[in-house]
Image (cartoon, rainbow over all chains, first blue to last red; front, side, top):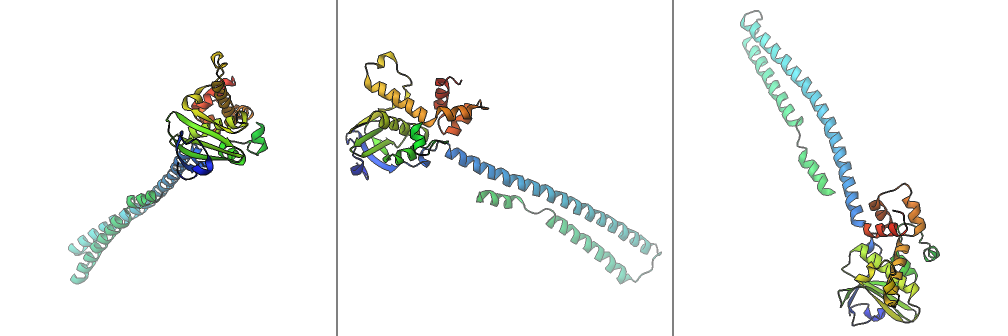
Length: 135
Length: 158
């Protein structure tokens, strides 16, 4: 007989050892189920919030991407028109100015492409995984 | 149930550990020498102790404690001890062959006490209104679905 057996005074031939007192939590049949349900609820709330956020961000990014593509398209048209105007001598500019203009426009297109790739497609999966691991 | 009302525990789910503690009964987990034993209650003067098998799942321990409380209130007036075997927890009604066997009759009475303690008829009838799902009822009363099914059936509510 172990701890507590002296005060409990029970038949030693029937009891091998006496353990911890039984608490209300020990006999709560559905405690684990409730805990699982609570965690499930939290998970569903987080996933729901994440889904809403992702949808809103996607719409915002789509809007930005649309405007940026339009600007890029206009810029390409403008640069081509200017290029042909210069080539056909309808527009007379200094050679260095024409080169600078064309290079600057292509640099701008490259920069905008970089912005689109870098900021309109952020890494979201790992952030979400971090949130899930904290649950 | 007068005993629940006396201790202000007439609400769901009924907690037999709190009831036992308020009656001054110590309830401990235990490992029994014989695997067929599920619980026991012993009285030595004013000292009443109760043991339940530590390896039993929560719903079984819960019913065992309620069952041992039944022995405490109904059968253990003086010093002594009552050992409950697993098979005793499944004795639902007093059969003619039990008339000569006082031990089996006491076990049936303790089971009936336990069922009435954990699933009081008044609360059961209140909860059953508008419900038809035994699983939901079992969760509400914190008992196994099997115990709930038997209780509802014995009260002719099914």
